[in-house]
Amino acid sequence: MKHRRSIELAPPEGFAVEEKQTLATLPQWFVVHARCGVCGYQSLLERRGIARRCGLDLSLARLAGRLKCRECGNRSDNLLLLGKLPRD
Ligand SMILES: [Zn+2]
Image (tube, rainbow, N blue to C red; front, side, top):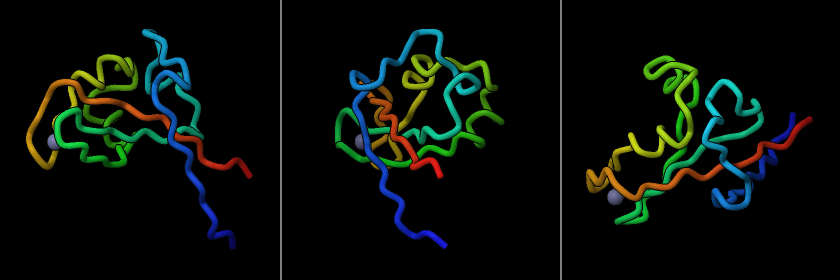
C-alpha cells in the first residue's frame, strides 16, 4: 500500500483552465482546491459532491465564482487551484 501522496498545487496559470473546461472534462487525476482571496483559507473541494450539486457541466470558471469561504464567508476573488494526483 502506498502512502506517499504528493500533491502539487499549481496556480490556474500553470494549468490552463479553459473557459470550457468543466468537471466532466477535467481529468480524474486532478484534484481541485479552493483558496480564499481574502483570508487565504484553502480547502480541498470534493469533485463528486460538487458535481452532484451543480452538475458535471459546470465550468471551472463558473465554479470559482460560486465558491464561498468557510472561514470568512467571502464570495469574491476566490481561486481554484488544480493539483495532480500521482498516477499509478
Ligand atoms: Zn476567507
